[in-house]
Image 1 (cartoon, rainbow, N blue to C red):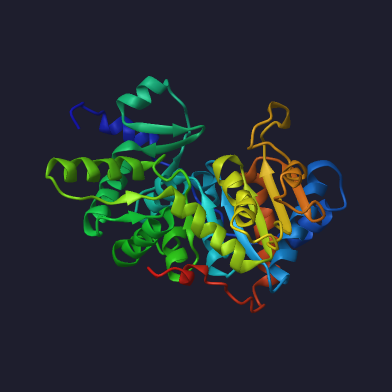
Image 2: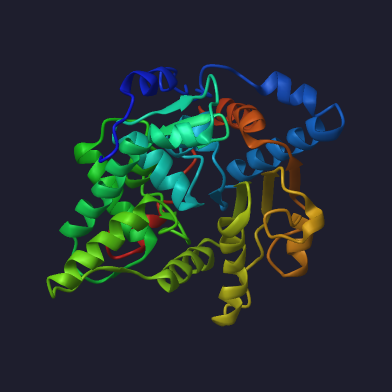
Length: 351
């Protein structure tokens, strides 16, 4: 770093770690059942939880966890990891920030912090503190992620990789060098749950991979590339093989559209018998009136031939406030059941 940083002031601001909620420590079934008998968002959450439980009870259903936004940094990181550990998720589609800047970041031993006060953001910049609403990230620690991604890339053969294939290498790295057992990336690697990030380089992975390519090019050497088409092809292949699928979506954006589009892509490939996603839940605060993908309702998705209108539920709420209830309810209902893991990662030759 070339700028002198006030280490004392920085330590004051980064003094209270975000504590990720543990859904195994409390049983949300009674409150979710009670909320289901209420109205408004409470009833929506009750129905959404019921639909997620239907996915888990359906032996043919492949459950797809779709994550956009910053809930991982805000305290839901261990929640998502527990869903993988407990066999309650088969496929993950997420933003690069969720996977790299948040989960892989903590897998390397770094932390997110509660902002007990929010000074001028120019002050935060001078201290190399990044802010997500009321959550802080140490930029110097985040740069360690950039360099670790670069180091992983340097060890791999210079060829095209889907984001799934590269993230699998990240999981392998955490098994060998990680400092947190409860990492989504690590657990997904161990449980053969594929992770797709359709906009992977929109994260710290991008900085490390750009450095990898620039350094290789300067040295006249070949370098690896990310194949976004392979992402779409592989995820569509899972949809074709899976048949029955259910979506648990937090936020919207690219991950939401990407997983839904697999139905259309399968039809383009001649698989006209591939069913729309049978079950779907979306938790979002996005406003439906602007026509954006993030806010488009699941009913709207049916017009595109992507989602079944019969078993779907929108929940208009901040996901960090309702996901712990939904996930705890489902975990306590299914912890003693033997749900057969799908292990879709084994579909690909690099596993």
